Image 1: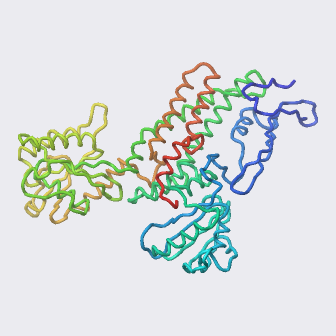
Image 2 (image 1 turned 90 degrees about the vertical axis):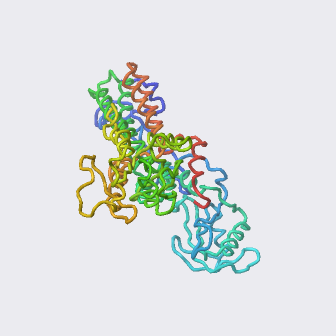
Image 3 (image 1 turned 180 degrees about the vertical axis):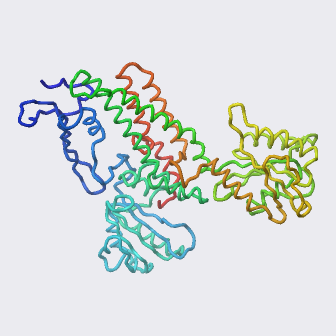
Amino acid sequence: MPLPQSPHLSQLLLSETSIGSGLRRSNLPILQPQTLHLGHLPTVEPSIHLPLCHKSLPDALILLLSSPRPCTRQGSGVSVPGSGATIFALSSGHGRCGIAVIRTSGPASGHALRSLTAPRDLPPARSACLRLLSHPRSGEPLDRALVLWFPGPQSFTGEDCAEFHVHGGPAVVSGVLQALGSVPGLRPAEAGEFTRRAFAHGKLSLTEVEGLADLIHAETEAQRRQALRQLDGELGHLCHGWARTLTKALAHVEAYIDFGEDDNLEEGVLEQANSEVRELQLALGAHLRDARRGQRLRSGAHVVVAGPPNAGKSSLVNLLSRKPVSIVSPEPGTTRDVLETPVDLAGFPALLSDTAGLREGAGPVEQEGVRRARERLEQADLILAVLDASDLASPSSCNFLDTVVAPAGAGSPNGNSQRLLLVLNKSDLLPPGGPDPSPNLRPHLLLSCLTGEGLDGLLEALRKELAEVCGDPSTGPPLLTRARHQHHLQGCLDALGHYTQTKDLALAAEALRLARGHLARITGGGGTEEILDIIFRDFCVGK
């Protein structure tokens, strides 16, 4: 007797089949062939035919909920403004350079390449050829350049693309761009339009697009490593793995709802789904606890240099930034405001803040600087506490040790201690070969900003501290580098919380669908046009 069709599975077409030599008939889910348009190549998905005698019902549903796709990545389904037009832009940097790269993308790329080159046949695909470029209307020679032809879908955008590697003088670049603009069907590209077309044609997921943007803007080794990992799809693969776990759990819940009394349903289906959800909750919670690390790695950790007046804070800031950021003077209280500068500290990005010397009894202007310094200390990811190694017994040094250094070492009641490196500056004033100036202090570093002695040790200590603050991009799971990632992971975790609390199986299944939707939005599924506009706006024209 055929199983009753479930309202939850009404989208599946049911048929009958004979199994073996018997006359038993069972309902078999079959997906009809669908045509997907990937680039210029339409592909047809194979029909899926799953006899229930070979697959348990939940396994069959899992395969149907995540049916196989061709090896070519499916397009995102996002519309691209003016996607029928062919676009062109300068992809390399502006200004004089040895070689400049101008690229096109769209159906008229081949025509544009023929129009500007002689002979007017297309070069072999993905092979560089030396051609004379001429204006298509006047025939005036523009440059002798290397040209490349990338027929779609085997190109960066998935469309027909051409590249012109021309000499990088402004007149040459301007002439070639004007010549391309005279070709019918071509228009200048908007910011990020090449990458947006690559996303629309399934060449890049949204997390890979963000990784590409981070790679373009990377200024430190740590940022470059993290951006490359995201561009390689590590975060996307992690999210897809979590989505497969939710798909399996959803299939088990749906199977129990629709076929709970059927003999084909294995025992312990709901228990298995609950176990998978609990494991996923733990994994999501661990990543959310580390979410700030990835954002610090992308935007920079906040490192605050603090200490009593005349301890050498400004000298240390100038030494680390390798430029005269702050005024250095033997007069105490020279710095009266917070001076900030972005720096590369041991390969990690940081925002370095020079602050006013902490002391009491100064004038109103300096006191305002002290107030701002204490405010920055509360916001700091890492404190560089600087003391004069030759004047540790002074009242200002003792007060700084009691009010800033000691509380940071003790930590807060919840167990979270603020990271602090204690630096004893002016070591050149200590007697050579003498004992440690203060053996009772917490672990510290000796440094002379005047001679540079001790700088290597300080940079190594900074590297270790910033690796904890920002995360090590070379090891461990991929980091969450954007608030958008954190928002959707938190939404997924909240939905799983509703799943574990509800007693209604229909509501539980809906919670799993909501959780899957949040994961899909991280990699680009279901993203709104407004969010995509913000992401692609980070790109320059020509990328």
